[in-house]
Image (tube, rainbow, N blue to C red; front, top):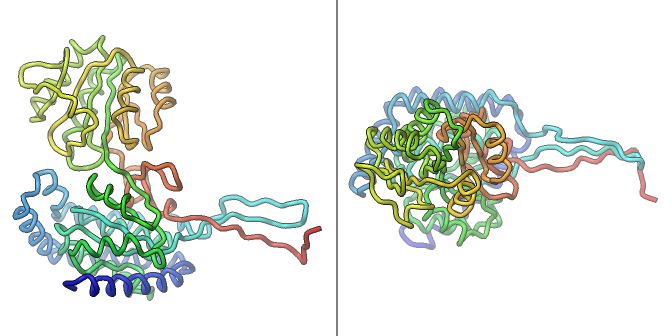
Amino acid sequence: MKDIEDISAVMTGIGKRAKAAAAELAFASAERKHAALIAAADAVWARRAEIIAANARDLDYGRDKGLSPAMMDRLKLDEARIQGIVDGLRTVAEQADPVGEVLAEWDMPSGLHIQRVRTPLGVIGVIYESRPNVTADAGALCLKSGNAVILRGGSESFHSSGAIHACLVEGLRAANLPEDAIQLVPTRDRAAVSELLTMTDHVDVIVPRGGKGLVGLVQREARVPVFAHLEGIVHIYVDKAADRQKTLDVVLNAKTRRTGICGAAECLLIHQDIAEGLGREVIAALLAAGVDVHAEGALAQSGTTTATDEDWGREFLDMIIAAKPVADIDEAIAHIRQYGSNHTDCIMTEDAAAAAHFFERLDSAILMHNASTQFADGGEFGMGAEIGIATGKMHARGPVGAAQLTSFKYLVRGDGTVRG
């Protein structure tokens, strides 16, 4: 697979097999899909030592590449995180099967009975970077929704993804479902990505999950439709009516719990009336937690860095946050509209009218009130797992779970009915 002709042939073969598997998977019973996911979960746990050993090879590779601590954290698997993968697979398994769900039905005066029902999208290509758990999440959600999937993990997670993928295939085999329903691209070569993006005969939708460079590349080069979020430029606006303790708890959690995920807070906007009080207290708490705060105006204090224009609209994915005072809620909203990415934004306030105003005037995929933005996650929304957070406005928006990986078709029934 060293030259482009080989990779082109390999990818075409994967695409053809995925399309054949998708045709069979589209009418697979809910029971068989459930059985496959439970068997896969059991396999992941049984083979956890193998997965951790594969992950150790990836961590060495990541260190050699000079990945940041936040990116290394994304890549790392331990027994607790593998338990999380197992739990995610089991949760998806136990969800209601979306395929065939009747979304609406009605009768027409002509005598026709019409139903709109969920149907799989077909073949989904998922391109992701360093988080190996995406292999399990994406595989499970695509299987649950009756779609075949072609997984192209990042070069950093190559061995971990391979070990997890083997468990998913074991699950398919146990349930007598086509093993080609979940395929992993067997090369780190970037030419495979270019091939996948243009396979319009075999792939129905592409889901990129990663940083701005990856998603930008996908959106530029794809000939296949894309569900994407470009960046998680997440804002928290602290209103003048914010509760002190809630604000301290939420801001610290939103920034520091895991800095490398797309729901991590990147910018703090604080109402000028409380900037000298609660605002400075929040900044001091962030500094004490080891966060590099790029602040301006009344929020600047000993230990902070002076904010520059480059800090606004920036996804740090690290222990760094930008902070500035704003005149009021409308200035906060204007700032978010200018610099945000329509991913997740939060307001801290005890004023219900202010929260309603924030929710009404912003159009981010996820809007939060008095809750950590780290909850911007399909698992936390009860979806079991997610394939990504979509910030576009077509088809899927917000966490993309099994139901969002379906389209619909119309079933029209008559009784010798003809049109006059």
